[in-house]
Length: 467
Ligand SMILES: Nc1nc2c(ncn2[C@@H]2O[C@H](COP(=O)(O)OP(=O)(O)O)[C@@H](O)[C@H]2O)c(=O)[nH]1
Ligand SMILES: [Mg+2]
Image (tube, rainbow, N blue to C red; front, side, top):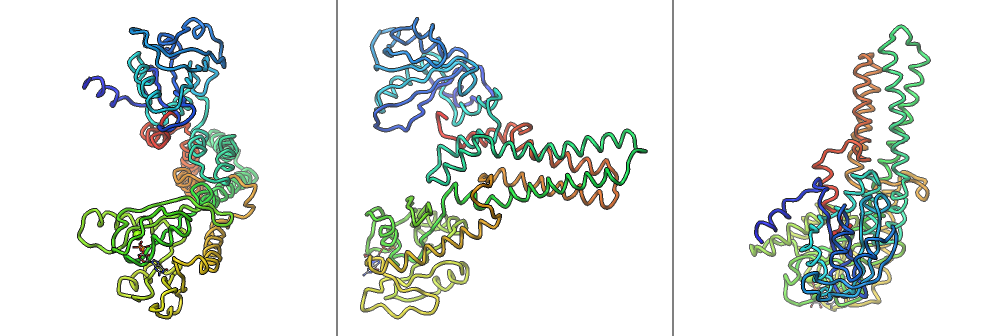
């Protein structure tokens, strides 16, 4: 057992000879669960534990076969299922594959999966099906990432953009940019072979092509903040000292009793989050632990995470208990995060002091004070979104949402600027070509044409299991 589990643990994406299987639906109760398998032997292995093996073996691609999953030794039936057969190369992975729809309880899915593993499937790594699709040339890396983005899409904007990328809009744009560069490189190579042919009109053409590539890159880079917001939603973080009313406000916004509201300071040690819509915006709302370090190690970890969330927040809601007033910790916060919305809470209590300038009096207990506050939050969200929309033409544009892609695009643009500079400085065509090639390689790394293995492992490692 030890040795077996070790060898499974140490499998990598590059062991593509092994047939793989995984649960593609969440582990929980549902009408159906889908178990996905793929690999050269996938159909044979599933047939070996199927009540009608021959029908499965004879099935053509895209055919559904009804039957039972049986333990081949004891003949014990495990579940009544429908098996969907795919024949290479016409499957998601490009390999032979069977998707088994069984009943949706964890008990059923576990039992069927265990049997499949015992019969020769290896448990799939995260994103391994997508990796195989990529390795088989069924998809480029940008489209594979879009599959993952679709499985994570939490709002309409995210779904729309991810689907656009899945359908190849971004890949085509990148291909266009790269072909501009290849054009210039071809010209330069010809010039290097026949230096006497260089004339001013050719140089003019390169500059034009390179400028176009630079503009296209700049547009994609500019689309990133908006693309990220649309993909991930806006991050709204509630912060403040213990007892300020953070969890009460969180509950009010989420409109359910989700966070534990307690009169004892320091109750929320980790953070809680929930997706809500505010106006047109998908908002990931986070209730943080307090920011005070009490020496308690669980709480200290909470404080560390709170600061990390705050540094990424699109909007920060900072609360103070208006019956207690400001202390040094609050003043430090105001100095450090001056963009936050400052909320003077517990305005419903007679003991509440008047709100100082820049603070807005609210009550996390009183829905009537909420109307104003919601409008204020909407404004903050809108300006945060507007900041991200500087690229213009927001509705039709192809957007980038992945940090990896944005980083490589920026590198590609820098390399192209260096090529332009080298050209202006008459540093020699070799050097110009070197920088252009570097830029084209960055684009190739985005689409997965020349992406190092460890980068691929990192990218696919963030995917869902069974995807
Ligand atoms: N009267 C009143 N009590 C509040 C208000 N906001 C929070 N509280 C109370 O203050 C205490 C601490 O609230 P909680 O939301 O747990 O604070 P947290 O530690 O910042 O999460 C609880 O007893 C709440 O009921 C408010 O606006 N008005
Ligand atoms: Mg709390």
